[in-house]
Length: 518
Ligand code: HEM
Image 1 (spheres, helix red, strand yellow):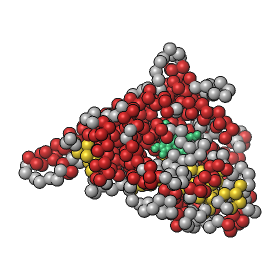
Image 2 (cartoon, protein in one colour):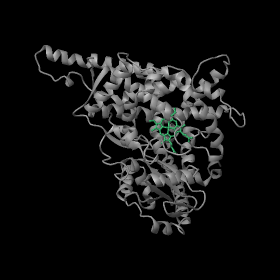
Image 3 (cartoon, rainbow, N blue to C red):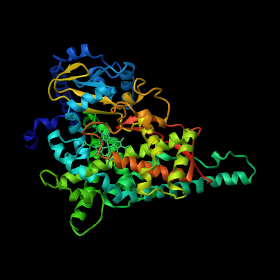
Image 4 (cartoon, rainbow, N blue to C red):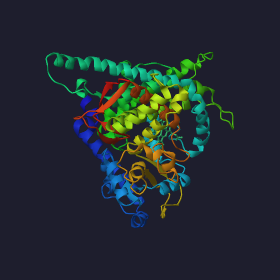
């Protein structure tokens, strides 16, 4: 009786059902993908004739190439080799036009206001749907007005101390490293083995240290919480943040959820964990109205739109907090590491940095806010580092209607990417672009240079809101370290870069820190 009433599906093995479901999903996805690609076919040939296609990233299945971290570099090289003319690639049927000259960058940021819709869709869950990086232009205008007050230069004085304290923690970490690693060499010397001064101390991965420092800085400047990442505390947050960031890059592949369902769920779990932590800290502060702490959170809670008087909502503050975490730590950490690397590679530059430090700081181990502002030569060094190693290699906008860019008429629904790397490495813009020469930024040499020639923080109205914060952080930390140490490169551990959301020196940047005799 029971067997006759059972469903015919019960007779089919589970594995066959799973295979059927997977095949159906693949067919539906294939049809959708094909329709999406062919729907744009009518205007693609027209732009293709006008703009040379990039072979390295070409084909509709170029998505495979797009997720190769080195792809950005290949694309950029081709743009540069094309003497600055625009190039095109396709991603799932959508044309993506690459430009790489200051003039074209100016055209893009003045004519195009929107970020690519695909970027909002893929990065929304990660940064938060209300993130200033992602919201459509109409929403962005009042949000940026509000946040403009938060990042006002005058406010920096209230959290400048965070940069100095975190730099001292960096010094403590180097001291601990040198004390441990130097001991082997003391033992070796005691046994009569000959060692060179630089090899007396093992090199340290300065990129890892600077990333931890940048996390400390952003947590303290934002929430006034000292989680001591540099001392190895708060591993859970740094691991979850790093894991979420790593998975975020993979999730950009539209079929990642199908290929790796468990990692996809893990990604969402990690993001939720990070967002909930920010929300908890925000709620704690909201529940304590008499708290007089002066940090970025306090400034966000206080900010009112100068035109409408509206405050930021809690959801907006959570999205911005996570955005500052993400946008503010990786980029700034790498910049500190690359600046120290370039100083280590160029003793003549280091000498000039020391001269300036002696003039402005004397024997003090750290600058005051005013003194940090007077370190002009160090500022050139940082700018030149950002020219050669821009942490963000490109930025994109989106055409919402037919628009002329770089002499070509682009249809609506087209991504346009400005290659920062191409502009910074172009011989037409920067003579001998491969040479590290901070003097390029002196007043005399800067005169007449296109203001869109240097754009590590992007350009136009949607440029980086944290530019002053980042530069002051790098300047303070590098000043403290150069006051105390001679920086020397490691002879056998050379860094190389991969583009992974931000340009990342994979395997670290190893340097020796030798105590200075002044
Ligand atoms: C060396 C360090 C940094 C670099 C190279 C950098 C680079 C950039 C770039 C290229 C953009 C623009 C992207 C575009 O045009 O689409 C951007 C936007 C942004 N950055 Fe930064 N950034 C750095 C540090 C920071 C810091 C420290 C913060 C905050 C604490 C921050 C917060 C933001 C925000 C909120 C945006 C979005 C602005 C908007 O759309 O209105 N960044 N950054």
